[in-house]
Length: 241
Ligand code: TMP
Image (cartoon, rainbow, N blue to C red; front, side, top):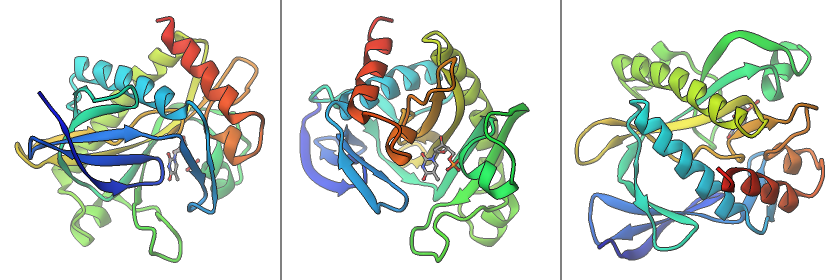
């Protein structure tokens, strides 16, 4: 049986604990929420539960579709899961189906325009730079900064397309359109395998209903309404499945 050990990391939204197995960790989704580079912060009652539930459902679906993930089993409470320990690759991997967010700002294009196919972007995960998490090309990431090998980056790209398709179908069942998302990968410390880590939740993607209303962290980022109610509605949607 897996038991929880000492806390080893407290991130913006998740807390990580050691376990009695050196190759496994426990990841707890908390109710903490933040935006920007952590300048805007709050606590949203129920968010940890919602995010853990959605992320767990999706990670199980990803595994079924051939994407290796860090998910092992449910954790010691409803907010947490047991995951494989990994050396994280310092990249934020973004997939987009519809224009929104920084894409619109960067390229001066209106929000809500569908892409012909999913787009794939890489950002260097580094909060210490003057521009946090800047855009990076695969060759600069591999040959310049040695964040991952070029073969690993090819796998990351292929997995990200598949993740996008699986997640899009999942949310469509609840009448929600997946607009874009961010994922992170790591290298399993025991097996050396590239695995999907972190989470896939309304904190890390954009979801719009048929009227274009946001059901994700944009409600918090842009003060669009009651954040707690929004996350509760999402939980109700996925709970009936
Ligand atoms: P962006 O439009 O701000 O670049 O965001 C694209 C998607 O990635 C959106 O669903 C939010 C998600 N995202 C994160 O989860 N964390 C981040 O740090 C960033 C920049 C984006």
